[in-house]
Image (cartoon, rainbow, N blue to C red; front, side, top):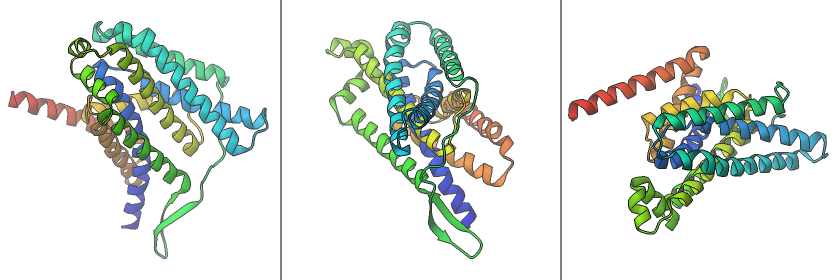
Length: 299
């Protein structure tokens, strides 16, 4: 029982990172209603940027390690702001009324460009951060086994909860949130009521990029490394998770991503890890097919 409890706690931490990614993805996707392939790339790009900037601050600027980590985080979030604005102005806004496959092709190009920029910046090498806040906190123990989480994991869970909770308040308890919901439901009607859809798209794009970057920073500080090619795998997972959870409700998507993280971790604890992604994606695909079939029968 303690071993199972350990897997659940580990799954909550992994799921919190997925939930942060899924929440940000749906903030923008509820407006676009198009497949956006840049989100996973932003996650990996900003996480990788944080690692490179932190190591630069440590090795070149001679900062203390906490200051170097803060420096790397600030650089990653700054890139997220710039990329969110760039994508809104040059990709999402011009193409939001185009055919759905147009945005798919454009965002795939952006994702590949970000991946290559990360690879070139790192000179095709993997850089690693030292373990941070790795002291274990014991929740339960027996003579043979202890249920623990590190301070790093607890901080990651807390940050994810705060960001998702803050995002929920922003979207459902503020004037911006009301405008966001109006544009998500019907942009033309919203514009006739005095809402500027272009501004809402720009704000949502920046907000989604910040969520992706935050998840990337949390993953980088925990795992110690994010490869420049990681974004495609995470982007595919979030695409499937939001399809199964919700394309229009950020909180529902976050809860679905949390469940996915729990399932992924429990699988790793009991079954071969090399088959984890294949089985989890197969499960999501089966779920989507069955749900679609059920909706057709009801119609």
